[in-house]
Amino acid sequence: LGNSTPPSETELVRAAARTFMAHRTVARVGRTYAIEVGFTSRNPASAAAVANGIGQAYILDLLQSKYQTTRLASDWLQDRIKELQNRALTADKAVVEYKEKNNIVSMDGGAGSTVSGRLIGEQQLAEFNTQLINARVATGEAKARVQRINDILKQDSPDAVTADALHNDVITRMRN
Image: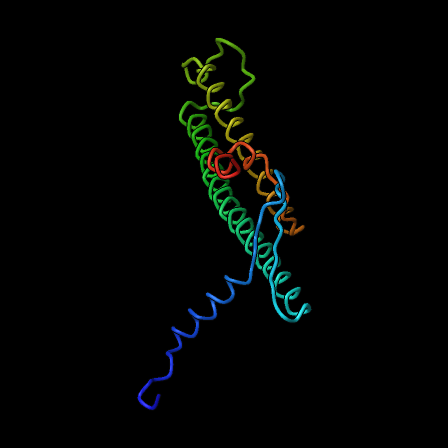
């Protein structure tokens, strides 16, 4: 006995983990999504505290995972909004440049009207306006999604789901 070395910290942690695992039970309740967590100990209060701690740790981990996923989606949407705003600005600039280049003062000159001896390209103007409208609509949709995600983050609700999450293939496979 005199020449035995005391156990290392790693050995003590492993022994404690083995003891913990031997005394805890986790089982699915029937065919439900409920989980029964149990822990056996000589002290019933300690056993209840450990079982409750396991449940709380699980819920906390789940909340943190959902928060992180929502934060990533929010960051992506913020980037997408910036991109769409830049596209809208580019489209606006293109319309202004086109108007300046062709001396167009207003778009209500009518078909066949001329400015500086040239016909106004109404089809091109309509295309620019369509692109501008599409960019603004996409920006509005992205802003609405970001607002929904921010509302979810403020509510701190673990069961809140965004429409994007409902249609996300990865999340659907994880649920299955």
